[in-house]
Length: 337
Ligand SMILES: [Zn+2]
Image (tube, rainbow, N blue to C red):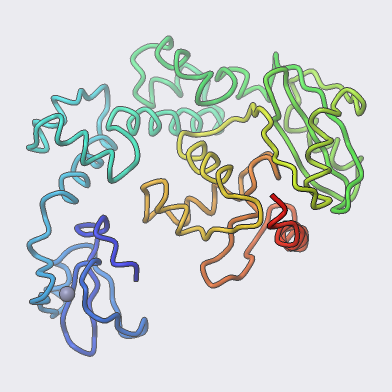
């Protein structure tokens, strides 16, 4: 619908009523949704009996988008390390050119993309119960040190701690009453690691202890004031900016989404697809929604400011009612700056 040229080469759409298929950026008038069929490439559309649009010439796209798609596939399938020069040779572009195209399309350099991908695989392996060494070799790391070099910035904790429920981390938390119910706020010495809502302080504490079962946890309501106060003020609708340090485990992708969310001004909202476009991954709308849903720190990462493009407030990890209340408060407070 957005005629986003960055999607050219990723799919084509065909119109049943005219028998023609187009690239996503075709300037022609948009057909009704029910008469549209999608195909991943021109060949498939033609096999289904459609012919190419004379206006947007979908068979001639190739070039840029296809280079990027090809490079992504190579990186996804690669077993070990892939250098930029190897990659560019296999794709058929100069290293500089490929780097630029790739970054524009994905928001990451090929190297960052590969590293984020591998980190996801390690985390999946650890969650599955693999030991650290197996998870890391399976994900294509040649040696443990390479993973550990990356770990603090991408996981927030070292992989061993991650697997063992935060062992070695020391976490202080507080539970405070708010207009949205009980709020649990937890932080390590580096920053916030959890902000959650619930009806019962007992349940909130139990869940936190379960998740960080190997961390040393202590409740200190007074000592957490510097974190709790700005959060409570924000809930009351006071025009506070929440700029607290975070210590959260995240994939590179989640980090990118959460960073974007922190840039949405108070009183405004964005749609999931807007965020996907802004991070340079316009097709990743569902992944963006998942990243919002997995936000561990309510308010500090304002995932409540992301709604559906039709205006529906959509879901919220801590209940749609709380999301609606937050948005109402923020809208009222708007214009006080
Ligand atoms: Zn067309």
